Amino acid sequence: MTTRDQRPVLVVGAGPSGLTAAVELTRRGVPVRCVDRAEGPSMSTKALGVWPRTLELLRRMGADEQIRRRILPQRAMRYYSDGRVIADLRFRDPSVQPVCLPQPDVETMLRDALTAAGGQVMWGTELVGFQQDGSAVKALLRGPDGVERTEEFSWVVGADGARSRVRGQLDISFEGATHELSFVVADIELDGPLEPDVTHYFCSPRGILVTCGLPSGRFRVFTSAPPGLRRDEVDLAAVQRLVDERGPGGLRLRDPDWISVFSVHSRHAERTREGRAFLLGDAAHIHSPAGGQGLNTGVADAHNLAWKLALCWHGHCDATLLDSFESERGQVARTAIKQAEVQTRIWLLNKPHQVALRDNALRVASALRLFHLDYLPWLAGQRTVYTQPGPRRRRLSLPAGRPWPGSGGFIQGGLVPQRQIWDTTGSRRMPLRAALSDLRHTLLIHGNGAFGAEAARLAAWAVDHCGEVVEVQILDTRAERLRRWAPGRHGAARGPDNARIALVRPDGIADLVCSARDSWRVRRRLEQLFAPLLTSAGTVAPASPAPDSLTEVH
Image 1 (tube, rainbow, N blue to C red):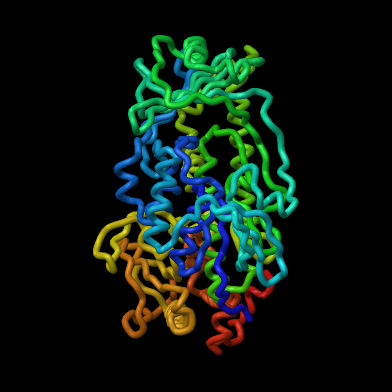
Image 2 (cartoon, rainbow, N blue to C red; image 1 turned 90 degrees about the horizontal axis):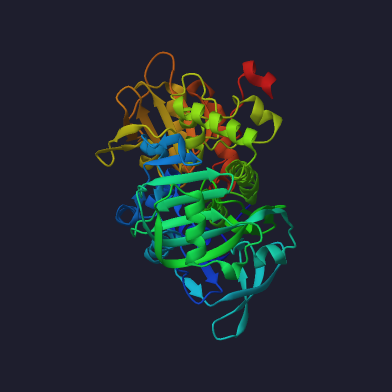
């Protein structure tokens, strides 16, 4: 039986991934030591694009007011070929609209959230090495005073970047390649006709130029470096020449904050878990900035791991729950790396027939709004669907990304639909996911206002036996009203039970979707998931048997 572990979790790295992990663990009552070898926060802007799913997670951590003050919403992505517009992707739907939110601002929000939750970053503290003995991790830390101390932790989270000490200590390979071209980036004052709330992609045989406005009023300029360009040759005049050569003309650069040359890598860790150690963010995967997924993927990595670690730390679940972290986030990382690599290569096409094919394809896709059907929702983080291994799980599920018939858009392994509902608890209208708990699982019974005996028995059982970790909510899909279930308050309707059930995880993913007639499946899942909690309370009963008509699927 899993028991509560009193040792803290060690989070190495105080960038977006590490801070998210530290905040989410601390919010869930887990003691955390978040260390970073740097003397203090970095002011380098680095990543800029933040997509709606990441904003949703930041708001959950209390950053709503700061988001409103610090962002520059993006109105469109516009592609040019030799100065002519070939595609104009406008963000008319807020669910796919990104914002410009520089990484230092994101990190400030997360540090404030960590402080509010009772945690802090230990700056100037370096991980020297660590050893695992099966039940704990012994880590050697060097503090700001140079003194080395050995401490014991329950888990280690490596969020320490592309040159990860944690990954190196685990001897995990970082497979992939470095792009043959280098890139130049500058944050700078730009005088000219470019709209600041549009990301402009200027493609030409001479190279790619990307510009977008910053919340400060300045611009980010990103362009491929000509072959043979030395780093010491890159100054304001050199960047101006590249912009004149590749841009629309009439742009004047001045007063740079910083100018840098960097290489683009496409790499991923051979594995992201070794015993009690995990890898997140750039420590696990790095890729081209095309698509703006780097920071967003790292934050989602950390959130996915944190709620699972917290359940295991408290002894509510056993460590097998953590196996899903590597498989789930690996799916997302591989897709992000592939997408970024494809887009980078599309940017850099220079042969006439390739350019013509790209330009025509983009024109057609833009005119038919094809990007809005799948690509933009994927970039926005709304199309993540975790597929589960194993023949039994596959046969009980529809193909990935397909909602169950009559399910109201709920997809097993996917995010709960972000429909607007009236939350009776808070007496306000809000998105459904925002109304569900992010600290506990939710047993969501949804239908046209009535549900039968099977759903009622499951709700009562969940409240009695899993109330510490599961919240039961009733969604009347006819009135779009959400209310909490309470024993004796919501009676079962007579007649057939047409309600649907979704077991929703703390990250808003539907772990299981089924009809009320198959409520035995939900109870079985809860008994498996929270077996340590139920065993310690002495409330585990034999799992409900499957109806005879369904035994063939097993």
